[in-house]
Length: 452
Image (tube, rainbow, N blue to C red; front, top):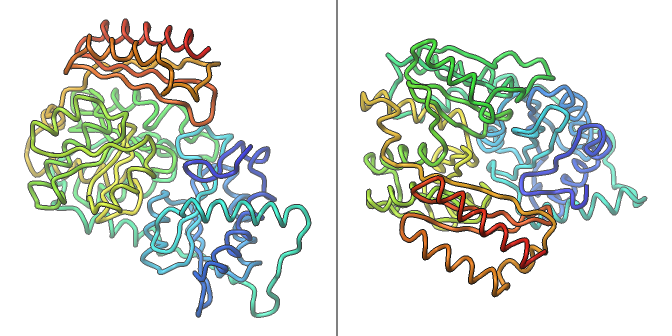
């Protein structure tokens, strides 16, 4: 697997890359590293452990719980809940650590382990590095210092987690959803119970699809990566809108009453205006990434809202928000962070807030999303090139300058190195899709010749 921790925890094929032994070892290492860092000082440590409904989550949960308890950590097992629910409960229960077992939008054979620090925030990079180092040291033979007797951790189920999280979601809504008909696609994932319960308790008429997880069908042809079923269901039932989550429900994409997709940029635009109106959009700023559609940036400029752009990845959006005190940020993919109410992307919360805006204004989601016009965007991956020279090649720089001059103010060029593969991503936006394709194709050819 190379370096164990990626941008969002440890992921791999369950029982091949991500084994029970690895899950147990990482959990013990995490407990020791946090103890060394002083997190457990002066009290008996507690961890919250949750998972999505993948079949492999059952044995991986058992391994994580065993590892933590063997290291002297008391464990509260919350069962199948969304990633943001585990983060929220880690915070409100004043736990020292949170662990979520999920591979998010990945197919069922995969699974993952994500650690949360006290307060429900993602673990710092340096702590992840230290956990990996300690794990490797002990995997190769250095014995653990193990507690015995009353020093071992105790394990209990925390059944109240479901109701406590749903109550939190409803409690932060600005208004009820009475009169709205909403279709929810749960991706046969972690929100299959939570999301319908929250929308129904908030007053909406709820129709669900993809809400029958069997451990094998998570993300299978449904959810935020496959919107076809949701589009059809919204039109069939005459619903006001549809909401789609991914497997661990930290994402939200939407469909308007006509069956048209509303992506993360459009959701951010709608929520930014709602939050500014309510005086909650601190510094009149929203945080996106360099992949945010140019149409989003132009819409925010027109509305007098500043857009701060970060590297791709919700962890970078969150870092910027925390550092500068911003309240709203997210990605085109549907990771939306409302920092006053969540420490990570929360797909159920995002969907509820979007529906609340529809209910409050009496306007359709399509009309609200029309505040921005998505410019056509073309992405070409150019493999087998020296990606390290993407920012130093004179030939490539000249080609980019020429392309930017051709596109003018109505277009944009972005070249990005892949973080995991020897390839360069060429992204072009333009007012016309054919122009975007032509410019992207020419730039991809230059990338091949200049960096191949």
